[in-house]
Image (cartoon, rainbow, N blue to C red; front, side, top):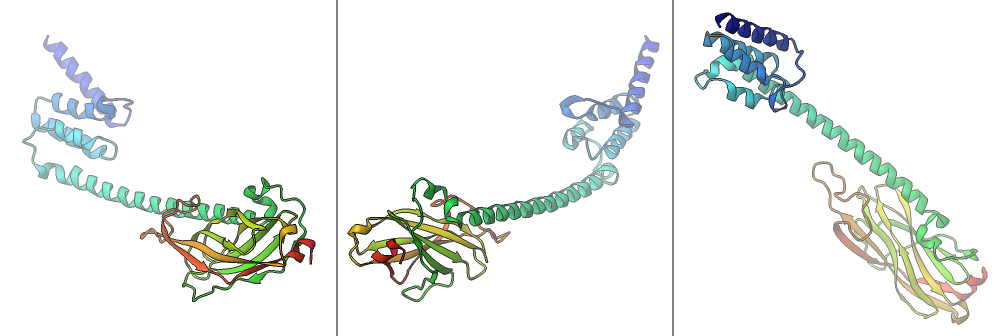
Length: 293
């Protein structure tokens, strides 16, 4: 019986030495090294040597072992001083280093995410600046263009706010529609959301607002186009119609850490921030423009 006991202890020591070398492939609680601590404590009749062996396991495998579970396996009378130098202090340093690495990795990933969002937004804005590429306008079957006016600068009727973009207006005429293109460029370092020209009132019932396509997000120093479509009955138009127009946009809330919009590239109407409405000088639509003059 004594020989069997000695042989059992010897086998457990051999297993312990192999696992110390890193050959374990499994273990309780998902940690391969917790059994090593248990074996180290049980395999030596001298409790001090067993505790020393267990602490050695903690020291060698501190990066991968379940630290809390391993400490709970140790006898309660083990002094903290015995664990401080070989295990606790190095484990704390490792944890702080890992925390710093994760913080740096998180910042890099966030920066990459913002760059990709900017690139995607710029590509969408560029595509929307060309009338045939706008999906909301394709469904209207506008037909062949008749006439396009020369671009002219939109001017606010009153003193504009600091964030008011630089806006240029172009009128596109079709047989049954007038499409007003408002090309906007931000004038400061602030992004704008839901930028669009809105026809608030028409002096003639022959021109009725139909569809508005906003610029969902306009980053700093980027130029994009919003579109306002009016259903037209040129034969009913009496001379010149006057359109009362407004420029709508939202100054988004910013992330205090990254100084980028909290809802970057959001759908229209869902962005958070402060909305602005700027009244513009009236726009004239002449009957002759439907004939290309």
